[in-house]
Length: 363
Image 1 (cartoon, rainbow, N blue to C red):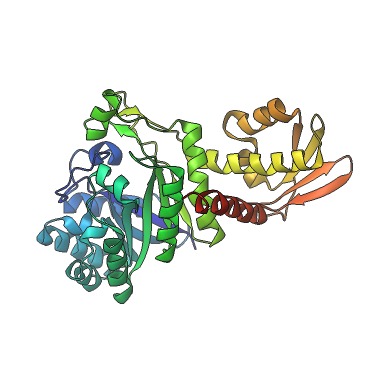
Image 2: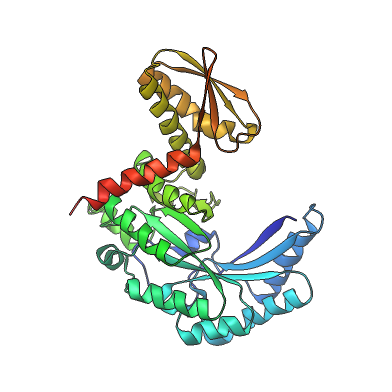
């Protein structure tokens, strides 16, 4: 049975903070919050446009700090969701919020109206990074919020950001470890972008902040990707959605935005896997047949064929992709009749071991 999300964006409503990177109206692609009738119409539109037989639906309040909204407004939105579930229009309710608005009282209200899942916008656990981001909480605040959710039997996931001011690969590694301790049900990973009308934009214009280049952001994101994947924690998304408003000339000022950012991360990992084999077996300059399931061909080739082109440039190897079923995420290389199965699972564990050696020895 297919499951579908019905996203309702509530940009910045109720949040008294102005994080240095944040302009929720640009990100959500909305100027004003929807009223209750608009939300009902959105639910109906998603249901009527669906062609899948008997899907299930989650109503998700995204885009702002839901539990920071005025309590009366929260209750009305939660009552609307609860009524939609009672009528069978939806089956689950999800919200997103900040960790410092997950007090016992906040969580009890969510529990009362049957919220199933909370995405927590953590961004980082490093105190310097959080301070520069304008997010004045610490790891203990995050842990307390998660404990309240667990007591209420509400699932949780995290949202983290890569490349914030003051961030580093080492800090990102430490943040990933801290978040893993909370046993999340999912993760979203966003590269930090410079959006219009933010404090971060003024720092960027004054030369006080340099956003990551796209390939830097890809390399950094591989750290949490490997560590979460190794523990079978679903990565819901890497990179922001390519909303129409975000791509307007006056919205995105700078930073590593790409509509296929998540696929670029995975493709870069496939490139590493293939290059590791090429160098280990000393097969530079040869032609190698790469067998893989059709669904991952585009990931192996890479956006605009960057994996194929870069491997040719760096090793002289020509890749020829063929369809091969029952491999999962693995690839089967045929080199002059010799077959070698390269396991993605093993490669990701080697990546994590490398990060552990690299960052745990830096003191």
